[in-house]
Image 1 (cartoon, one colour):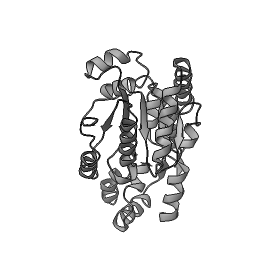
Image 2 (image 1 turned 90 degrees about the vertical axis):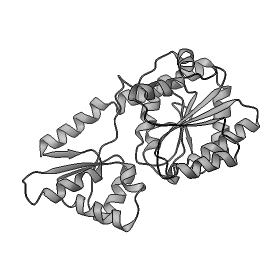
Image 3 (image 1 turned 45 degrees about the horizontal axis):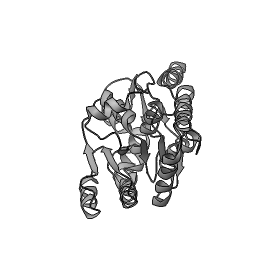
Image 4 (image 1 turned 90 degrees about the horizontal axis):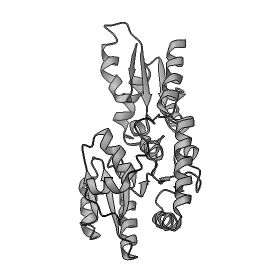
Length: 283
């Protein structure tokens, strides 16, 4: 039995299935579907999925898209996060010193594939407004992808060269540090399944702002354990950041605790892997 954690990874096993006897199970995430909408990718997905014994998907939205393409329902199983790794370090000032970032700066973090679908340009526009309002801020963007050149040009057009930093090849430990030293994590996507970065941010104790798409509203309760925005809404991103800046330390602490508790209760990797194991074992 073979389990592929990305849908496209199953394609070679589908090809060799005619020579060997094994079953294939796949896990479909938002990027497998949302970032590859063309007819060629749809054909490849149909070939893969028609040869799989079990198809897991991260959300009801991804399940619906797969069903509309192939007529096949999936086993909805959300992403999980290792809460022993992604956790509050309670050492923001030391981490700022480690990364040579001024302790008084408002640090925004975004972690995603650099595709137009991810809405990174909206975060850049929000940063420009914050700076125009005399809020000393920087934006850290962790990710690569086909939209990077366009985003670099937009950074220049907006005059943000000294305030935006693109990061690549960070270890898991470094990602935990980035979440912990940032004031807010933003994911402004136009579509998602269930983004693991939202879960990582919440588990690490970083205030999280994310688009109300896919399964995100099932994770974030607006104003309680994070903040929701409508896709494409720069004005709301700015207003949510202003609200975060108005919150007391106690209010921020309560929100962070609620966010981590949500992940521990519903999305810890041990809970998710047990569900998958039970499904695979039963058939």
